[in-house]
Length: 226
View 1 (tube, rainbow, N blue to C red):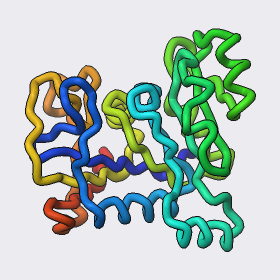
View 2 (view 1 turned 135 degrees about the vertical axis):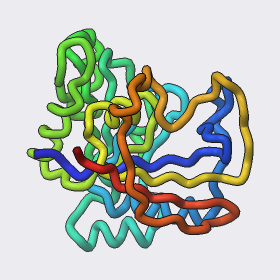
View 3 (view 1 turned 90 degrees about the horizontal axis):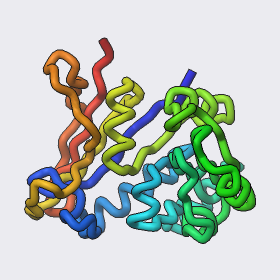
């Protein structure tokens, strides 16, 4: 058993999530900002890869006081469980995700993570060891389900998102397409990684809805199962 997994991303009209220097760019507007805060508050956990932590230092907290209060009234922590997929234990001990806002944190590492780094991380988070060389995402999701996670939001980055798609672990994709063009063949996309070569292996999506939001478009797809 695993949680329902949905990926949330914002990209430019030409499919980029930041510049080729990996510099953050504001792609969405206030309406999408509020939407993301809402779906974050509705999730049991939110997950990112170590690359996102090192590049952006996100806290992944719920920003709205009303949404935090609604979670408290339901007997939950103010923020969903924050999860970092970090095979080699590179999460900085002072990372915002480990300190900002109340709630539980999980850092998922592989057996290759240095013991010293793992022990340091245990001062700030629950450390889950899953996989030998890299984090075994299927095993991690099973462990999250055992811990009560039923709805998991994935915010990035491109390598983690692609790996989840490659392994058939995504149920829904939500993308805000903004009204800018970033360009650059080396600029990251929502799903990077190695990619697939054969068309028959491509994950297929079924359109749920497409809604105008801000000056862009919110598109939601369901991942078809084979």
